[in-house]
Image (tube, rainbow, N blue to C red):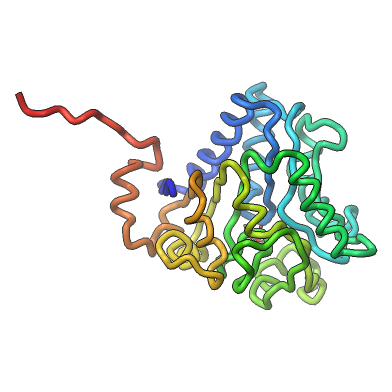
Length: 266
Ligand code: GLP
């Protein structure tokens, strides 16, 4: 796990946006795994800026979002489909039909989840998966106790997750109780994973994810099993890491590792 600790949330956001831009430059037809939540808003704003400046294009890329609330149709103001349209899709050049989310209003949500999983596999799986981090350690909507090899399916949201997401709804009671989410096994099939977390509220989950045991109690800890994960944090989110000094030694200021060959004394 590469742990990059930045001085400010803004720098952490810039770092993640740069990773995406670089990946699309190297492989324009990358299959992106996209995330929602407050954390991603600034990342998408930077990507739009990069697109407008001619630094990135999405016209050959495809995307699959992590999750969607069950019961909300795509045009519902609080659906993740709408979130993605408003914050990214309507402002960049993805081709028609290149962006996918599960349908929250599917008549048969279980069949919808299974079809979504098959569509991801048919696309060759995710090339670069973007993740946020729930304060309880969830990724996507894989709440604590999720199977570490789970596939896309229906999950019941915890009370704390519903409370955390209530700010996006007019009434806290309107937050759906169920969601369709990519599974942890689905996420782990991605070629490369980038997780972004900032703020004190993510510090405990970040420590459990990076330094705790691999356990369903902290779904994000499953990322320890993946060989290409970059975790990008700000100072506050990194504040409970026991090995923080080591991560900062390897990646000063959240930058690339400095690898200088050993020079034996003459
Ligand atoms: C939601 C999403 C997650 C996201 C998490 C963190 O529950 N399903 O994908 O990572 O919230 O949200 P925020 O970025 O708002 O803290």
